[in-house]
Length: 299
Figure: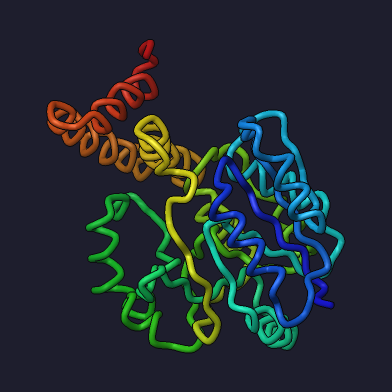
């Protein structure tokens, strides 16, 4: 049996969660504990899943406190050497965990571990990146910096190596020892959704804890299981990307760098959303929500 606890955060992502749990049940060696933290889906589906997947430990939350909140709730039930935080919209090949854990147990300097993620078409999802700073908070600038000045972290280099060392790894698959999770002080619930994985990696970097991408193992990641269900959900989650970027800046940058980064994000998104809200219901909803965040206006 694998000395592993898998923690999955769910919010009304039932179809994909079912496939994810079925893939975990088919592992070549059984997993000691699988925990699903349900963030108050409150849609009447949970009882049937508890019956169908009776071997799963269910943490039934009374609020939707966000991804970090759910991860921490699930982690409180962990009692194994290893803990894996896994998205519900992933599927794990049957021979993945046995070889992966055996390898990682021989590498004590591997602290936050991820693997290659591919979509249903077999395309690389590139689940990693470089840390945001005052000059690269916008996506195109970040890509430029990575390709020109941080070639070791470019997509072409990182995806072709058997082992890569990115600044941060995606929260869709984060494997670590339980003692390292406790050393990091858990996921920061200041982030409701998005940037919590970058923050976790940033805090790991500050503690000299190595972040690792292992391309010899992979999982399937079907993006957007809980974030693209309908227009209102897309508005909420897309807005949260921008809000969380401000939160990350507020936490990790200082002085002029912090002010510059805030201004770049605000100016770019204010102009873009203000223009495209004339043509898109999603952009219009995002603009309204973000005006409330930026100016404290009633929305």
